Length: 307
Ligand SMILES: C[S@@+](CC[C@H](N)C(=O)[O-])C[C@H]1O[C@@H](n2cnc3c(N)ncnc32)[C@H](O)[C@@H]1O
Image: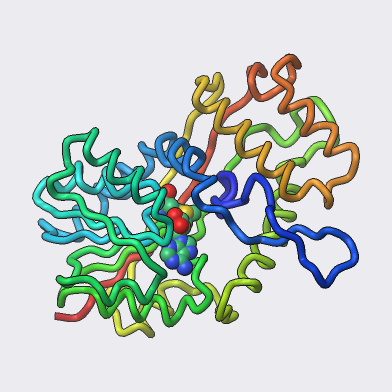
């Protein structure tokens, strides 16, 4: 989490401290409600990418009756599903009630509230409360927050109607906002931030309740969950320079979250560069520089429950 890296959830602040260490040590617990605005602006900026992904899914899944968005967060993508599949009911499922409240409000605003529901609870167990099997079950950047991903995929698959499709969005590539050498600091800053984020992500996974180490061969995992016809496709968001205000605000949010979450592991030169990128008064900042762009890739894996 974080930013918009291929993991989109780096928290802005870590709130708790590990007691067993003699110095305050940030952990990877995520305050999801705090992330509402960030998750919304991220999914809104990435809307063209999601539209391509959903239109591809629309060719695989004809006229779904029930779409379940697992780990929906504030429901930007859930509402896009409601728009792209006008004959479907959409159920947004998430552990965070404040985020589901925003999802419901968005659905009302977009005029799809009459076929939009929410379900709050811990995944994957909460799916036992579904009254109907899903024709399409989507998990966007949520599976990797569950300790046992193999067990979760099996649970997702069991909630599908025969012939129903499971689609997970996982992986892709870390997003890019700047050239390798952007004229200040040591070239390669984003690659160094990626490495730190990988470290954060691994720690986040290790600390999840019931964490199980699993090789992330998603098509193989979908097959071992009893699903067939695994397919994979990646989608591109390409917003070239000059960046819009929205793209600049998004880049600022990502760099700011990274500075807060991994700053201790940055050298002072990189920290100073990040500070300049984030200072609105600095012409070299993401708010003003002419070379800022957004380039993002997200990967979707699908598979079908045998009829
Ligand atoms: C990175 S966000 C993705 C939100 C949305 N799918 C999107 O792509 O914008 C992950 C979501 O999974 C939810 N989540 C994480 N762990 C969960 C759990 N164990 N049970 C239920 N929801 C969970 C969080 O509340 C959060 O909304």
